[in-house]
Amino acid sequence: MKQQYQWELLAVGANDEKFKVEWREKRKITIISHRKRLLDMDNFIGGTKILTDSLEGMELIFLDNTVYLKSEYIQYKSKVERTEIIIEKL
Image 1 (cartoon, rainbow, N blue to C red):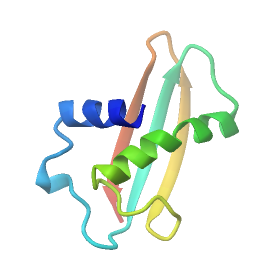
Image 2: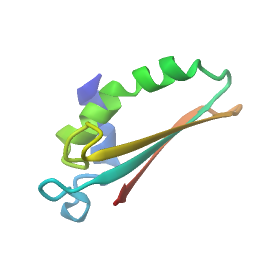
Image 3: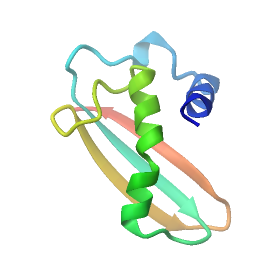
């Protein structure tokens, strides 16, 4: 599944050098989930682990620990299901 996420990130141009994280650079990610049914927040956050690992593998975040990464998780009820990822430098 991690490889699938990385292929999807490549498809949207996430491998461009301008998005690569610098050594020890801090970033913030916001993961926004649009679903027909909202998830329990613990399940939602736990379900994003592979996605976060993929972002690290693609060098879009330095490490997925709280020293280098601030994470925010938002859910919306929607008929059209999708996930948005916003990455910001801190």
